[in-house]
Amino acid sequence: MTSERQTWFWVSIFAAFVGVVWLLSDVLFPFVAGIGLAYLLDPIADKLEEMEMATMGRCCSLDSAVCAYRGRSFTRHNPLLQSQLVELSTRVPGYVGALRAHATELIATMQSHLTDADISALKQKVGGAAGPDLIAWVGRVLSNIWGGGVALLNLLSLLVITPIVMFYLLRDWDRIVATVDGWLPQRQAHIIRDQVSEIDSVLSAFVRGQFTVCIVLGVFYAVGLSVVGLDFGFIIGFGTGLISFVPYFGMLVGFVAGVGVAIAQFGEWQPVVLVAGVFVVGQFLEGNFITPKLVGDKIGLHPVWIIFALLAGGAVFGFTGILLAIPAAAIIGVLSRFGISQYLTSAAYLKDDSDNEAG
Image (cartoon, rainbow, N blue to C red):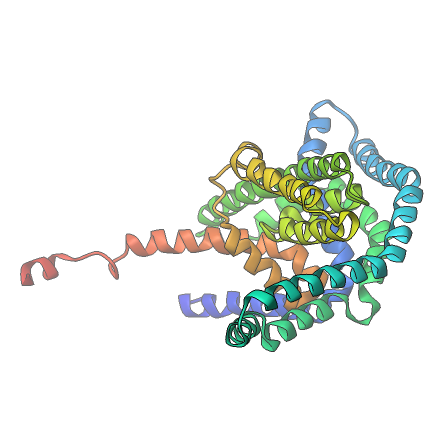
């Protein structure tokens, strides 16, 4: 097979893969989640295997531990969370009314100090910053993720299908890796193995580290907001930590929710400042201590690249795209760096002897 045919062969394989993911994105969600969990737990399974535990026993132990943790957490915390969520839903209209009253008062104060021309200019700037195009785009992304009742089906399938997929993948993980390794083109096998190893190091460092960061932030925000006395501070704080795998976005969502509830609840600026301070301190600790310690700064995944990957994956493939976004970002990043390094050592970049003689 010529080099050109090889290129077209791999391009066709990639296009077929993307097409299958696009067509079956709703069905693939629990399977992708199971693959991700198996990837995360495979090092633990290897440690258990080194302790001479049987393969079936180690898989059952891990799978049972995960399911037991989910069940115990559900039975222990679900009544509390359910009651708080129900109470929060009943208080939302009151919060909205209180925020509207504060906003009306603020607008009246601003109007007393601004001219009509200043108010008109302010409206134009705000409209330009958050125009209908931006709102429509955000709406399309959210509707693609949640539309059609697929979100509820996906969440339910996580409890049934994902543990089964994880169990069988943990049992056969080494065999699957060995089989795929045997399919590699022999001439390029060493290059592919090097790049896969680099992708694995980047992906594992980010995913496992970021998971720990989310848990630490969730606990910090939950405790901090509860100490301040914010209503539903535990839910808002821990939820903020869980969605902090999207850099800055998670904190901003929690900040808006927390400050909004604080304004409606307290009606005074001192508690609102304390609530905002919890998020500011959490962001400072996350950026300067928690993330550098648990994730590190050598994983090669820039926060802007992560945000773009998550939004693009969610917009195109829904929940499945969100799960595939980080692995895809890691693969593209590693392959891009490899391609650039190859280019910098190629004749297309370097000067040859004829160029030097002509100069």
